[in-house]
Length: 396
View 1 (tube, one colour):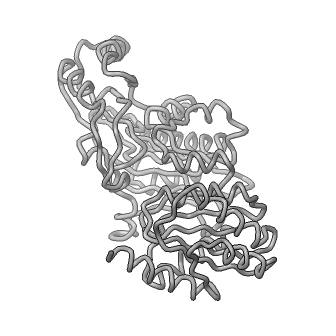
View 2 (cartoon, helix red, strand yellow; view 1 turned 180 degrees about the vertical axis):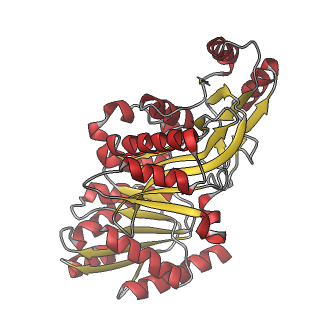
């Protein structure tokens, strides 16, 4: 689960991580009140301020969603103007995101920008601290262009992060003296946030050193593991459903694993492994999946029908149903497809590959339904047929 920057900073601050003072604004008519409260807490009549649009996507600054201003009136004007604006960043896609929340905070005098994150490492199946002296840039770009500038500190799952390991990271960033000590303490606190909140990522980019020697989290991104939210109702309450895809929300309510992608071939599969293999073989055959959709091993007729409606809600050129009947039977899938298409009109090609329990019965149900179904003998045959069908649909 994603949360907004201001929420991430409030969470980090509750664990002792230093962040600039700020106020969130939830409506345009609340701007003056929020800015006044911020200035009063700062003890200055008109310090430099930063106005930040709050959406669940990076790249806001380049899209015009982050502005530094020197005057209170200008900050208030920009904050009001940001409400309702559509930010388009590399992470939002061409449709962008509408700004519904704005964060105003004190600007700081930056001497150095760093990068710091606590993430899960697939190679070691553990937690790793990632840091770099090249803050303020995309870590993926840095990893590709200058991997030697990235510092990695694996964390032992039994002993946790040691203070000496946090200091080693700070020293590797070129920090010394009190600044290194402050940075090491901040690293330890970020790790505590990661563990205590069941996070999958805690990222600060940039982590800044001010001219006064302070170490502050100037930006913050926290991803929470959905599977751990039952332990944290206070964190679950931070969810902003307005920032989530409606289809993904609907799927979650019915315990379906669904993630929207940027291709045009809809996929319905049972089992995460088979779903990933299906996406791989579609790519190998020249196609691009429109989604990840796992109906699960215990799928019912109703869940299959809902899954099919989700697929038809996407802008797809063709649909590929790829089922290996083990726990879920092929006839259950077939009945779900027939039931869904009795309620929703199908205007794109449908390729179905059934294998396993009750395959023959499932194929007979589809054949007797009168639906225009393209049968596939195996997974590759199905992938090739659906890619060809999608290409023909696009050409039409």
